[in-house]
Length: 336
Image (tube, rainbow, N blue to C red; front, side, top):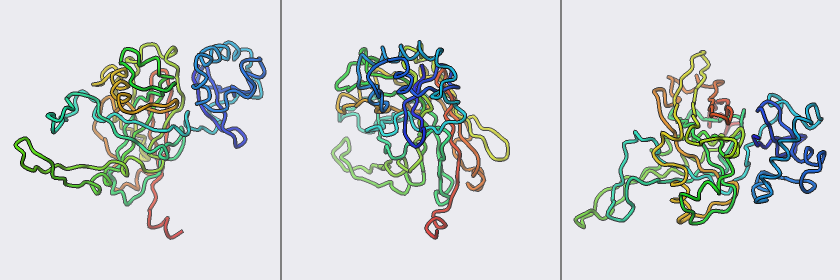
């Protein structure tokens, strides 16, 4: 069963779907069929934190859904207001340079970092937006808007110092995330630092601070569903394809590849993160773009030409995450 968070009458509700087309309010479904505690689950994290009860609850709801067809708590996917599956995770950890073709290396391996190994940055949870939501960009960003369609791992239970071979026990399921960047901000926030060189002399090191470029509001579309691992099959077979639908009717495919083609597997990534950073239920790991193709930036002449277009991420067995592009002017917004 696919899991989602939707808004009904102004309230967020955890929903489940067998086909991705009809969603059922799981609180009302469970009350109707006497499954689990009353009012459970209030949030997706409530479901995760229920531990072993989660699997039994989800399985019971799966069995009940065919009998609930046409119930007043069944909603067509085309008609619902989507929320991010976990609207407020405590953190979003992003894997940097996870493509096998990435031309990267660690600058100072003598400090014990080693290479290759997974390296990370954090994306602001406030950047999260939902399926069919608006990706709001500003013309002053100088057209350097970089979308990256990525598989997303959603953590199901608290994880500290987890071994790679045990990591999947801590995964609630897989979803999709568009790791959008305002690359101009990354250039503006770059600083030159002096660090010790191999011979003791100072060497220049360029540090591109990523917090602002990655943390822009709406720059982390997430969803539409979380699919439990048991329903995914082999995670390495999950293919993520990212397409930009331009207002002139043309379409660019900018990413297409599987998790299995990425440089670092899920287990190794979770082991590396949790060696020093605890992951909480509902935390999201954006796995990095599996592959890239031409047409990478939203920079088709004038960025304003992208206004009204959309970006879609399609994930095997997960569904399609869609974002509507809206281009605005910061100067005009300030004058309102």
